[in-house]
Image (cartoon, rainbow over all chains, first blue to last red; front, side, top):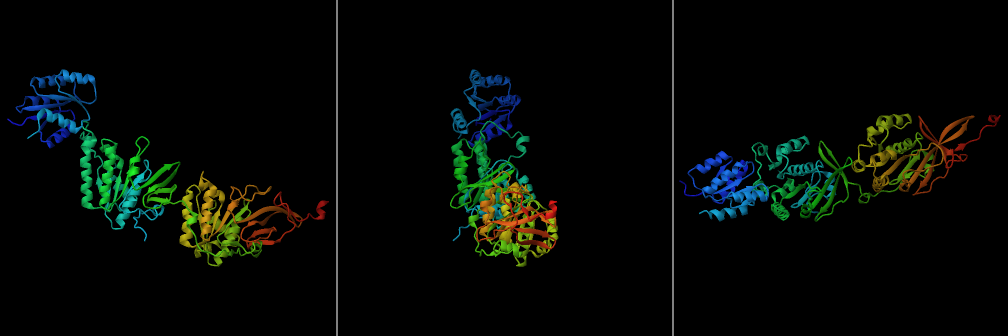
Length: 123
Length: 488
């Protein structure tokens, strides 16, 4: 059991995952990645405690919302990353329990601000 | 004390820059695709290599290997040029290296600039060519950040005592005004209507030649042909008469045509204009002087044979170096390139007489530009250098009303010699004969009479003054009297 909570990044694009992990690691957070629904499920079922989930909707079908519900059931905070500004997506994100919706491309400073707000500054 | 200059390795361009670039500055090369920016940069770096300097080519677009291949094909020593290849690799595509979660400005700016700093700090180059600077725009979040980034980058390079040449792919959609303001000099390359030009619009701390100048891109790189400025050239000479070697003609001209003057030889086709010009050259060769004919119409072999047929030993003169017959293909050269050829003959070969045969042929070379201004430029340059200029001007009419010169070049002429056909009875036979006269002579008086001229295998023969010839300027000239018996 790892005492340090992890950030789970979910993205179809592996390069995006690399970049997210790279920037978050640089700030002291540990990150695990999921590039598919299966990997997402596997990460949620693991023993490691997850402190935050980032979900990039691009490339996923509506099944992704089902998994967002599971994250909510586990009382893990998460927010959704959308390819475009969309009121419909924002409403659906909030309805499924997301704390927020961010629009790509993300500004790193903003992302880090949100992460710190939810997880605190890493020791 | 002349300021230290960095040669570009392109002689014409160095001339436009008053000797070359000032070291430790940043210069912008602008132009569309295919204009020659990369070629210019390679010249710049290769010249540094030849001078024992360290050089660095930073490429953000084209892969370094491709540039090396092109540089080698152009004859540059590409192995001595250091390359920093920051162009995208194929892995970026094959391994789905594309991303969209962050902007390129945040992902790539730091690694890119760090690589450049590392390379420059390690190599300490004296010359840097960066192709293209506009790529940095994509690494900046906004215009202000782009400007600050470029300014600080250029300052970093200049503080290393580096001279920077960077390119811009500016267009109407993505203007590069900010780069123009930031640079110490701007070179604009353009390509339109089958014509390539370079134009310098900025050069801090130095004079430069403004205007558009011809460029040629060849398999040996870039050539620049500065537009000729006659006033910049002066040579001390005595305006003494240049003899034709034919006493009657010299008498007509009161001694000959003077050095540093412009003479128009005018007349219809086949009347002997070229032969008269070559006669002056034959006489000059006898004094050891060199002449050049720029022939736009006849091939050299044909000219040599024609000369031989009229007792002008052109081949011998060529072998001795006192004559050069240059065939100029009208559509091959721009006016600036032709002026460059002329300058080479005068400044490197001590030429005394230049003949342009003919003005019509030269007009083709000008191709839509102003014939008179270009011809004026070349002729005034030659005159300033003490060269005797002969312009062959073919009139359209075989007979009829006289037209001394066409194309409005008569103002340019210090001397006008004209030849005409006329009818004459010789032993009861009506024959077509030729007559020569002088219409204008600035530096001395001239004989007002007309003389018959014959071009034979023994050379040119000119008769004594022929008072009975009349009607030259207004009608078909006639001479002599019909014998009485013909009136039966």
